[in-house]
Image (cartoon, rainbow, N blue to C red; front, side, top):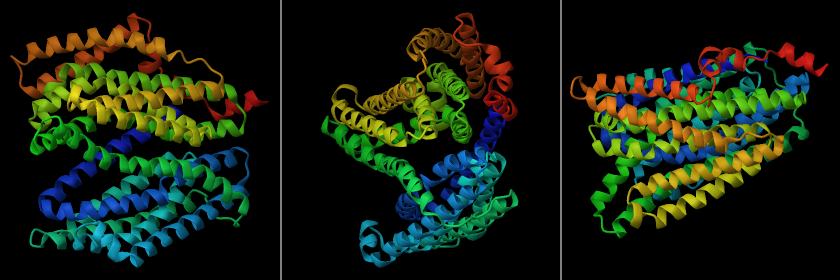
Length: 512
């Protein structure tokens, strides 16, 4: 097997670059297209994204997992047959969804509340078909462990979208014309991305095989729970956007105050909490074919090593950001948004990153182990607890109810996921003691950071103060962790490559 360390580094670099480009493109759109044009496009895009989730959210992961097992057993015929079946299924599904929108055009027009939005949705529909093909071939490349092709395809799509978008939009156009232009660029970018990833698939030796009913049933059964979970996830944000402002108004806030508090929390604070998941998400991406291959080879020891080291890594990365946000959260809010409240909320919500990181990595492990149905049930349990908290907590905690609701959601999901992993693999992770020790470690690290930042604020400008705070926080976290024997600094910082690099040749020897 390829080096997991190299794969994580490669995926992380490309992910960060892709996200930066996407962020810059949104800035360009907001400035050139204007608020009205962006609003029209976003309304249509929200419906399109639900359709896209149905077509392509579960398939790539399941294709990667099943194809990785076929590659491990050197069954090229079944691998090729799987790709053909998945391609046919996704194409039929995408075409059916397009026809539904076209046939019930008037209904969708009323749903979107603006007749102009339906024009953009119709323009975006071909992207659904292009994305169906794109997602299947990306899943195949993922299963091969070809992360370079996987990352390049994502970066290519983002670059093409930006170039086409800049060429298409103009300050002389109306809001609707600019919104329509953005829709056309999205469709054209998806078409070009489909062509590009198809060429990559065949260039790296991929091929299509005969259609087989044997491949259809497991593909649908295994991808459906993941698709349902992500569809449900796409509806969570709108529901939260309805519940929180309504509950804040019910306890005495004005409508403007409630919306302002919600905007600060969801628009400014929570996106920062997902920063560690960029790295953890890279590990999750690399982990799926790795564990799937080991399952096919029945190498239990290798799976245990991967699971234990991956959970430890996710916990290490998630916890590292906690003292940073606790100590410098207020200054981060001032620097990024010129909003102190967002920084205060960031300090309060910093603990959420630990269960969030564990949820991210444990969900990927469960999907790799073929436990996506039980993972979906865990997701539902967490969502129920979250909505109960969002409804009953506002009289006690105000806008902080959002933090408690999200935190309890991730805490329950991660706990259930970890228990499921322990039962499945029959291993002891001892996370409770590790997390308790981390809590003892994080408090002095955050306190030291707060003290240094408060002194630096009198001497240095805000940006330099942030840099100093970040360095002090991370350094103290690592040193205190080493002193407390909580983690091995060499394993995480010096010998990370050795920690994650277990070559394929070694696995084969073990099997013999």
